[in-house]
Length: 300
Image (cartoon, rainbow, N blue to C red; front, side, top):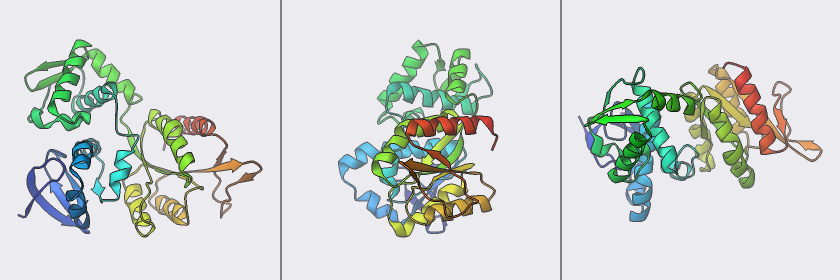
């Protein structure tokens, strides 16, 4: 079997082939699964500057591990680099990183005080999006001091409070993948990231966003993301016909679609069909409130 070095965790593992992607199986990025990296993107990632690799490769490794651990499919290209760098899914603070570790043990245990063994602790700092093992150890000790986690060697247990904290951070349930087609306007996209996406996550969904990628690749990227999602949120301010292609593809796969459209003054982003009835919004705060009401009042 062919083997190849994973760029993000530096482990040499068996690879498979699928639709132009190399599938890396069992590396530290996805110990119990696999992820795909497009063959044409291996070299562009490998020639990035040392500084970019030092900052981003641990984050990408963590991103892969969390998503695949949640049962989602990961297929990366070089165009995903900026999307991951700016993703609201990536934690920044020590507190948020600690929550991700609690969520990992929550997913892998049946309840508080049930042991979870980390066989490769020195290589598991991607569980907390940390740049090194030292930060992971610091986070573990902090969670122990807060009586949220117990550790004995490579065996870990959530305390009753740790289990409750993890459960509450997930809205009382495991997050479902959701794809979001953001408006084209840069300032509006930023407002969605700050005000809207966190509310979607509070409602039990893990939002993945449409990123700025070459137009010729946009449709393929969107379809790939939608296929692994449980919900599509599409704003009519997204550029070009891709938004309608995405909506039609989702509906064809029985994936629910929520349409939104911004009102500017007396005008609302036009819908090409009377069958598309978007939720109209003026401010990001208003839209967040609308989506919260919709997502908590209906089961998709």
